Amino acid sequence: MTCTDPAEQGSARCLQASCHCGTVRFDLVLPPGKPEVRRCNCSLCRRKGAAMLTVRVGQLRILCGSDRLTLYRWNTGTARHYFCSQCGIYTHHQRRRDPLQIGVNVGCLEGVDPIEFETSEVRDGKLDP
Ligand SMILES: [Zn+2]
Image (tube, rainbow, N blue to C red):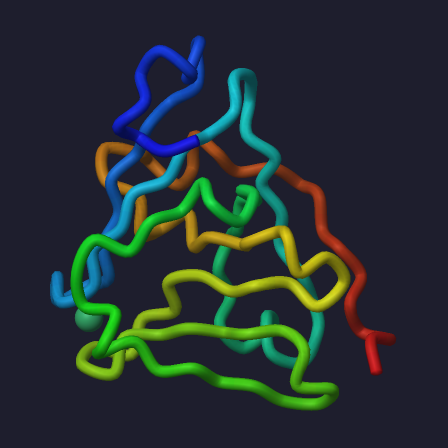
């Protein structure tokens, strides 16, 4: 499902997103309903401090700047963490636990107040290998 297939979206929301400097732009399709937003306290997430929502692979599309995205991998190297090499902002990552899931930085979404999406759910990632 992409943002160009409105017939398939139902009440799904299509959101535009970008890094801080605008080099990296992407869009994503949110399933209907309140998005599941979470924070994580693993050694990486606690440092970047971003609230994240989850989409499936294929629901996020990089529109421009993919050549400026830097990939950061650590530990098992399974998860793929992307950030803009120009402004340093974390945009999204492919999850280790489910590589079909992509975590998206809520703060990158245009027209969305991150507070609106906030939730108290914290995933306990401290014990991740
Ligand atoms: Zn940037």
